[in-house]
Length: 267
Length: 267
Image (cartoon, rainbow over all chains, first blue to last red; front, top):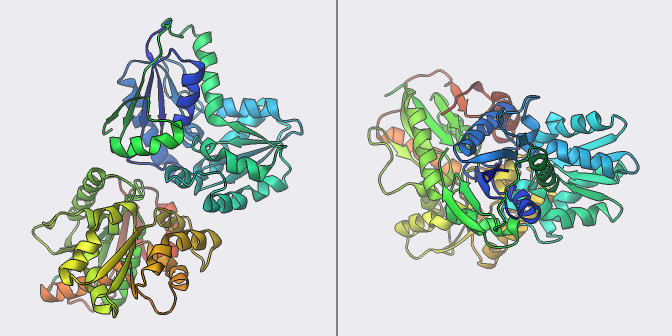
């Protein structure tokens, strides 16, 4: 049992899609969130720069009382090496949880992956999938505009620009005949409607955010780190750019006003 | 006469559109360029963060032998206060040069402005235009996706996604009946074809990059700071993210391979 918070970080607001699921499945846990809004996006930067930013984000969270850290960012998760970046508490990215769920979901053994350019170039999801099941056939596509379309609110079902971009990005994945598609960036669940419309009913969408949240619950249980509190947990948000911009944009992600205090903090 | 370099900076690669013009009109001058590719974009961040980044960018250039500094970035130029950020050498942003050119160009007294959200929210171009000519009617529109469309190479004339975004952004400016449109972000000249097609032949496009380059030439002349060299000048580029990513993307901006050494430098 441990009343410390779950630490969650992302390049910006995408990780809020994981926070939303954590609040649903672990309602008594406290969450400390860090969004690096002064440096978003990560997914079009070099590996070296992403790894430097990741180190700083983790160091920031570790200055708070946290019992587990989640890299709720597909790009960060894809740039992690084989060793956990923290050695004294549980840690997870989003790649392995999503890969495991996709392997369990696929019936025809064909899985699609969409993510940022850095994520797709890294081959992280393919590697994770093939570690679970080497027979799965993988088709991956980078979607460089999606993070921006989501951050700027082009999120209505079938928004014409998002639809056009999605049709272009998803065409090779549709041609590959996948029955399962990993939304490999934590921003993408916000436009899952449009993606789902293009992929069609026969394709199961796997949210990396949701799978990471479920994996976190399982990990806390296994390590006996769940809180014994029966009160509603608190969320506290830190961002590296302005609080008001975060509050304005976060409602796209939480589908509600921000449920906690927000602070601006340079890292 | 002064053989020191002209210092040019931008959030990323947009400022290269100014470098290209500088190389044409001041072929003997040396240029030192800084592109903050590890933190691009600036135009969707808060004023405080943009001002902090600007200070760091200028400090970086000042560690090199420069005789004048150009903020070749519409967003940075829009966040500058009334006082020049350097007091011992000439400095210019792109806003005043573009505003002056637009006032000279318009026949019907109606000028359009497109820029990043931060630029448009600041009202910088309107203020500069009204300082030159208070009678000019101004219509401004933020185009949050344009920087990304340009940085990711959606730059072919009438690329469908860029065309769709441009039609949406430009509709209110077309309705306003402007005869002159300021491309208020240094990324936009790269998609001037598509913008021009939508605006029509009767509308003159003013490139903030080009006007800033011409203004720089005039300023160096006035301060007797032009080089006396008759050799071809050298360009040296510094970027805060990876050199290879810069080289790959810069050809969209220079319409040629990068004409100078490139270094990666954290700031």
